[in-house]
Length: 451
Image (cartoon, rainbow, N blue to C red; front, side, top):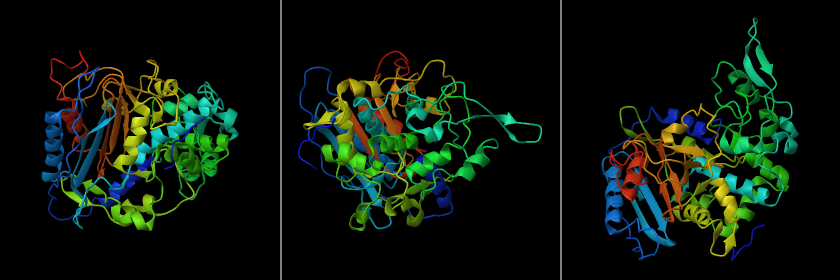
């Protein structure tokens, strides 16, 4: 149970990529110029691991982020870092709305897309703590909508799909680590037509209707045999709603956002706050940074829908999301509000991917990582200087518009990076930011030591 202090794409990635495609034809003006903001509070001296974010590191982060704006690679970017329970870095550069000359700021609201997923994972784990589910429960135990799942096994001589029984049931653990087997690509020549016909992620569907429709689509592979990003976290949101008896959005508000005083994390941005909502930009193949039409780019955030997906859709501010990250860093508690127990956070941040799962889609592009409960978990140091930097034991995730957060328990550090750039991180902004925080990985360090 949660105690509180004073109150306070088949998934989102696919939706974002569709928006990106719409924006390719739009060419806009000259690149924006960076605007630096107030300076952060210096980090205190501390026992334990050495302080990471020193004055020199703050200057290096400033230089790195500002260079992305000055070079025209992004319109605006901001970052916030806490280390050892203190804010040690904040700055913002460039524009949340380049055309209106509205600066990127601490109060800017951005669409976090898949950074919604760890929030959903925490909601699911709160029910796990109450004993209302176990990770190895069959999904169908809680959701009979998925009791008759079959696996696509090709076509017969007439071209009809051949469907076989799964080798084992889909479990809740499969949902949390993307090994359930759900179809993800509507253009796939095998299950794609069936996925398109079911249209589970239509925004007019409730979570229950989404589950009913997804339950009719054959799995793309047998549960547990591959890692494939998809609608698993949306099914988690459905489970939270089903098991708790509360609408998912209300459950998040009551069990996570209100206790943590995350007052500006939500699916729908009201009219009064839209002046703070960041525009979205796409980096075209010719390297021109073009603004996406607001009617497309901001549709998720400015129109209400029946669907409250667990995998994408939330908007947030730097200060809100850092509170979520700090709660995880502190073992599930922040400022007197306990959301999860420490052992549950450790479970979330543990690699649940078996070594037998060899096919991992694009997950290896994240570096030497496994996968926990709705977060990537760094299991080994970078194998090369070209990889994204990070510390073994950290857990993290990102969003389709190139946002990023990570939690580094070793150094007691949590970081959030906000930007609104599509397609996902085409300019290695994440590597630049991570290298600025930890220092570049030298070739002789790669694969040997933590940064």
